[in-house]
Image (cartoon, rainbow, N blue to C red; front, side, top):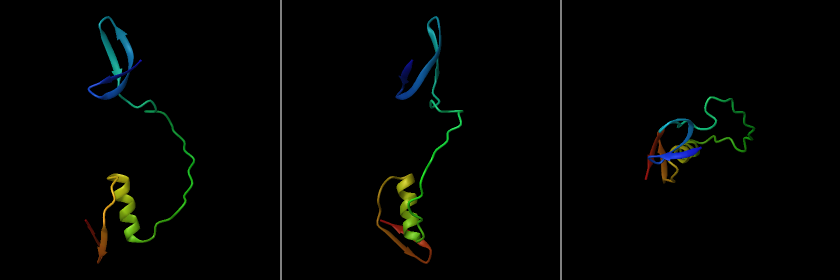
Length: 74
């Protein structure tokens, strides 16, 4: 049975009397997962690489300036 404990999703895997054991692993944890994907673009320029990494890890857009292999974000 799916539950939420302190805002964390989990699944009750065992109930004994008044106690339950909750699994907080994702439903695919421990399983082999196979994906098919298509590469649509290869980013070659440094600004594009920085923009891609920021989008992946932070999820926001910044003004980017690159000088002498240093990126400045605003």
